[in-house]
Each structure stands twice: as C-alpha cells, then as structure tokens.
Length: 150
Length: 279
Image 1 (cartoon, rainbow over the protein chains, first blue to last red):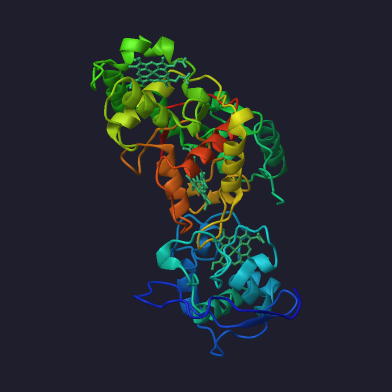
Image 2 (image 1 turned 135 degrees about the vertical axis):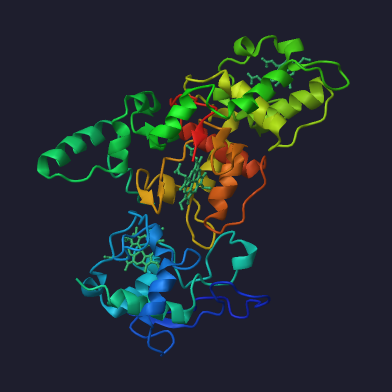
C-alpha cells in the first residue's frame, strides 16, 4: 500500500440537485505507509465543526460505533474502540487515513470509508458518486480527534 | 473473509465469562449477560445460535409470550378467518382442501422457503399462499405486505411454533442457497456493509441504542413497535439495506427469497417463534 495515488471519486459524476450531505469529485490524496500525511484541503481543520460532524447521524455518526468523550449525547456504541485518547495514540496522518478509508488499514473492518465514492455496490441513487463527508469535514474531524488526548 | 466470530462465545461461554468478571472486579454486566439471566431465553438458544428473543428486552419478551397481549395476534386472527373463507371462482377456501390448519399446516412453516418442482422456483410461504389462491381457488393474489397476506403467513407459521427450523438447501435448492449466501456476505451501499458485518461480526454489541442480534428470521412476520404493525421479513431486509444507504429490492423478489433461505439455514434447529414482537 505504499505511495499509491488514489482518486476518491469518479470525476465528472453528475452534480445535479442539492447535496444534503457529502460531496462528489473527491480530491486526490497520497497514501504513505497507511497514512495520509497531507491535508486534503490545505485549510486547517476546525475541531468544533469536526465534533459536530462526528455526532451528526447523517454524516460521521461515529457514536453509532464508538464511545467518545461527548457526555451530552446518549447511547454511545461499542462496535469500535473508545476514541478518548486517540489523539495521543495516533498521529494526524494516521487519523486522516482512518477517516478517509479505514479499509486501507483493515480490509475487513465494518467502519465505513468516509471519503470514498467508488468501488461500492448498489448505492442508493441519491448518494451515488458522493462521499459521506466532504474533504473539509475530513480535516475538521481529524482536528477534533487530535484534541482527544489522554 | 476473516471474521471475529461472536466475540463473547455465547451461551455457555457467557455465563463462565460472567462468573469471571464478577470475581475479578465489580465490572458492569454487558447487555447480553443481563439478558442471559432471564430463564425464559433458554429455549431460544441452540449452541451458539440465538434468536432475536434473547436480545429483546424483558418487557418485549413478556408481550410476545402472552398470546392475548401480543398485538401480532390481531393479524393471526385475520389469517384464521380467511383460512375458512370461500373466495374465488372455484368456490373454495383453504379449509375445503386442508381441513384444520393446526393439523394440516403443522411444521410446514418451518420448511420455507422451499423449492417447488411444479413452478421450478424457490418459494417463500407467501408465494405458496398466492399460488394456492390463484391456481386452486381461482382467487386474486394478495399483496405481499397486505394484512391478509401477513395474517395468513403468520397463521400458517404459528402452526410450527416451537418446532425447529428445518429448510432444505441441497438438491435443487442449492443454487438458491448459494445466491442467498453471496448476498449476505456482499458489502453494499454507501456505508459499504454486508449483513454479516453486523449480524455475524458484532452480535451482542451496542450499535448506538440498538443491541445487535444475530439477525435471525424465525419470528417473522413480526410485530414491530417501530412499525406499529406486523411486517414481513422482506420488509426488514429493505430496512437493513436502506440503513446502509443501499438500494433495496422489492418484497418477494428472487434476491430476497434466496436471502431468506440462507437466513433460515443460519437459524436451523432454532425454534420457530412466529409471531414475534420486536422493537
């Protein structure tokens, strides 16, 4: 998986109608030993918006599977490991890879690829060619995860 | 595909684990450990297989267990009424040929979907019921999710309650089973998940506010509080497809009937519990 150039979405996917969540035409990124060292947008992530996006059930919905230090939200899932301390355990580049496409690290994982719109089967029409979150939202989520230090 | 097969080795394992936890530290019991303390769940566990009854809350189990409280019996009653109601040009009812359902339909529901040499197709019980109506009664078919169809399906399956699931997957049924298995393990939708990702890899795990079960089919048609009515297994398939943002199929399609056969084989030896009650 070294030095692989991935294009996250079909270029030219029709962009008609309003997009409630997600976006098409994912930007290119470079994977270096299961990490993505470079920001997708070049714009620093906003941790406050990252937290919101992580909670949002139509976007990150990370709480479905992870316990997170967000006590104001009920019913945190237990499918994945708790994310408290993940900002100490993993680097920004590792976290970016995790959020963009966890399957690069673990092909068997249940965790969705939040920034990939290709190689999927029978996606509902209204989501076709789109990614679950936008490039900037990936950066925001990563910035938020970096604040989760132990 | 590597799978973390049921992380808590269930049934026997869980109680051993429970004892270990208590000894080690006053650790909080898991949701499944709490469920397993209820003696009622015993009949719904065979080896490592567990029906949705085990994962349901105690209150839900209580409603299911009482035929007068269980709202699904409103539909069972519709089925029972229609069993002996004459309909169609042949002037017959199911009872004209089959007599009393508790005798003639005993055990039948546990064997569906079933390959039919006559139609050369794998038939879910609903297909069979409509085939009987159209061919033997000269009556109009019922819509899959109609009260009449749900009622008759529930009534016929009720005659197998407590009997072990026992479908045929060899011989002419084999290709249908294989297709169902493929469907079950195929990732799909924007979230890119297979049925197995949730129901094989993570049963007994909280996914947000839901305790994941093994996704067993033996209680359908089921009364779901969320639906406020009885619904078919294929309706549940549609929900489980849509929640991963995958295009669902229609009820009664070959795809879902094959999938039903695969699930019924997963549930082999578990008791039929139609009509179940679920959240």
